[in-house]
View 1 (cartoon, rainbow, N blue to C red):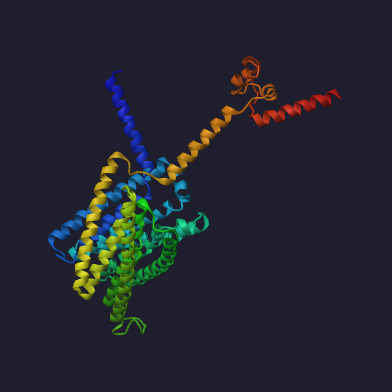
View 2: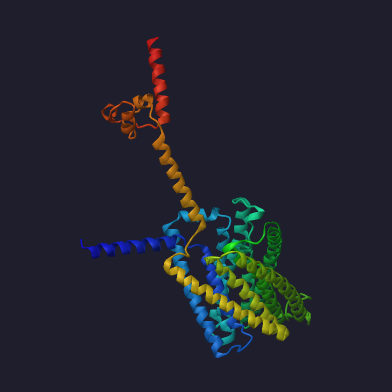
Length: 472
């Protein structure tokens, strides 16, 4: 065999090993990249300047199809991961933090549905069958979101152990699924109105229930997270990026409520049925004004958390060196939905402040996305960004057990009683020689059972007792 062939074989083996490691460590947290890229597409779609221009619509399609491509690739890699390494699922479900990132999957999917529905509404792409397909996909995503919101939280209650010190803003991820699904329902309602008023009203009502449940749980968790920050301080190193996550439920919740208000204003009052409330002439406008007031309150709360987050991350960057990690993708979606909410408030109120602030914040979010995407591409090439903490912990634990076992076996003395009672034990030839025995004295005969040291001691004691009883 030539040296060149050996080098090619080593290179192929090294590449296969690195690829296998990347697949094994491809965690659900990667779907935050789908969420973040989708948020950028939504910002272009709702741009306060050059709205529906050729340039912005082109950028929307570029980001949408790129995001859709990434979503397909991530699904393939995820399927390979659990098919080749099925044991990682159990390890992940036992981890108190990584389990929460399962919620990023339905949020990434519903972001794509929202963009597609927006393209239909603005550019007239697709027909009624396209809209009903998106509607069916939305219901499927709602089901998965409900499974995350209730299932993952139930696992937190019953299968995992938590402490106040270890609470992070990542706790919000399972409940944000309901809020994000609700906002997509509001977008779809505008497209459904052309084809079916009952379907539109059903979507609006169910989306209202989703955002209410999501915000209720989010407020509870935000209270716990605020207490954790007050008692134990701001997360350090790359984990500090999570301080922006509270912008997600508040910003997306307010955006969803604005869309729902607009939807109710379009479909109400009803002209059939017996409901006196839904048939009132001004019911749609009343709901629209109420949703605007609620959205302004939530925008104010999100701005409060934004100020805290900027101060926290500035403090950490000033005192610590923060290496780049995959966790930085959690910066994009919360900031993107806050910018999108601000722009939507401009559309409803026609306020120049919301227009300028929304556009400025959208540009800042786009710059952050560009930086995170570039750094991620550099680390994907080297494989350094692929790391599942719970697998590292499991590998270290397994290696420690194996090392302890080998060390224990190497240092166990073999007594004369064990040597006499255990014929053919594989560990005896060396140890028995040290005790004055030879390998030929301990050959294993057919049908003999090899015992461990504990069993051999008991066997020797029983044989001695039988000998003494027989002599009596």
